[in-house]
Image 1: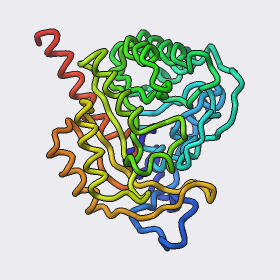
Image 2 (image 1 turned 180 degrees about the vertical axis):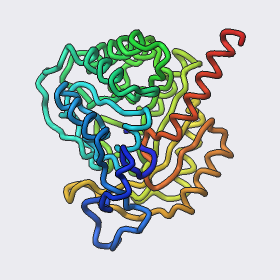
Image 3 (image 1 turned 60 degrees about the horizontal axis):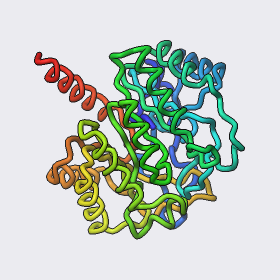
Image 4 (image 1 turned 60 degrees about the vertical axis):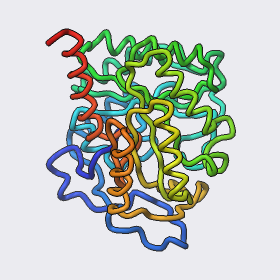
Length: 325
């Protein structure tokens, strides 16, 4: 989801009340630290966009995953749209998105609706993600690819990042998305290998994610690839370093670090709150390992506005170089 800092969508942010972005906290952790408090989103622009998305029956991760930075992203030219409904066929123990069986239901007009919303919001950088749809014959690959093609045709200058399902590692489905030519292709590793079975749905997997990222580069080495790691689930330092090495081994270009926050009492508890200073240290470590860009901080999520700004500049530079400018 698209997250950056902690202002709302308008100048009215300063009068909004402070709220905790983690509604449920493990009692062993105690009170949440001050750096995990943000102002509630509000303002005319925020309400306008929220109403429009409701009218179009479009879902955004910004809303579904309770993004703490939704206000500024929506007003600053970025947003993360979630395709294929609000019900995921998988049940990762960290995720706030609803889980169940959508029974093959899908909105075939969704690609056009997303394109319309992007135009109305005046976006420059869009992230397209989706729930997992194991109930569909192609797990939603064609719907995802058609959305990419539709929004790129509507605005060729728009930078498109995708965070797709893993398609159970099906290389044909992965290639189908690569062929739609998103600028940035993300697949989140989420946590270290030891914790994967406890944190993620059994149909996901550490090696499956690594193989997915490797396949993207194999199909098109020019695609920028990206992954994300959550802290606070019980990971050890050396395990995180090994995960970063594994990501670099499959050619991953960009990595983000953020704090895991327990969305409800039914989800995994927070084992540790990582300090801003520790996040700075992890950024230095990842930078030294050769990642093109690293976003690291308590409120950072898999898509992050500062990172999007950096990648927009990087992609535009590539385009100019390709044209000999």
